[in-house]
Image (cartoon, rainbow, N blue to C red; front, side):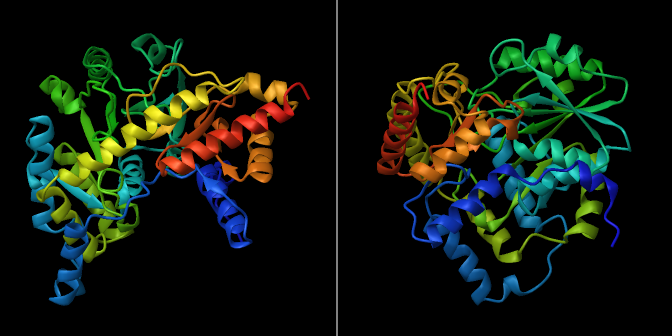
Length: 395
């Protein structure tokens, strides 16, 4: 059987690989604390779940919807975005998708011809690179000269005449850093000058902590907004990872192209999930704030515990998302492991704590830990990691 050559360049998801191994260990009775997966540990709020149940009971969820989403959902998303950012999209500029992950893949499919480039700042979410490759494009990794945020100078060092887009993720997965308004403005104006589309992945925009200031790309000058496609969804803010509803908000030409893609690739997101998403966007937002406060408490509790582990170095405390991304080069060296990957494997085998090696995000000296877990689990995980590093130190 012939498999397309492009698949040879695509790596499986590192986060899913770790998650699968932890599931196998749990099934075998192991005491595992899984800090590898980026999903809230809360259940979906009742009012959202009840909206889906109602749509099933009254028959509304029994049928196809428009491929780009229910008109009521597209209006709800447009209203939600306008309330958050002040920028008003028309409903026909909104396309609902099967999760924000497919929203990103659909955008790459819509804008890339064979060999076109996409600038991907490092560290970057594991699927950006692979999705660009699947779409026939070329990932262009951009390394920051300092910290986790790229500058115009960093972009200038990588951009080519074939570059079509820049992925900008703020708050960032995996580091939790947030770009300031000034930083975004400089990058936004640079992208406009170069006719490079900004793909603004703002899926974590509600998860900002300790008084940090957050700015959306849609809150900048009109020329920047017109050169931007917003990607978001319900999974992180509303604890709805299993419902699979994402969306794009885009200039009309791109929205139309995206609607064509989803009409052939997936059809509409599950109807019941769409009714749940309408309730999420239009209902009481108190649950969002309650979960945000819980994540903030977890960050403030576990960060100093991990920072105290020998060989764990942080580039400051994260401001958003729900991940910690320490440099563990010194810890790996002190414990005698050949690589961070082997360190992570041994950590899971010996202590039951699952984390993701930084190689998956383009930075092999780091690891990503999710604090979307209960406080007791986080404290226990930090204790186990500390004991593991100490016991194997100077091996």
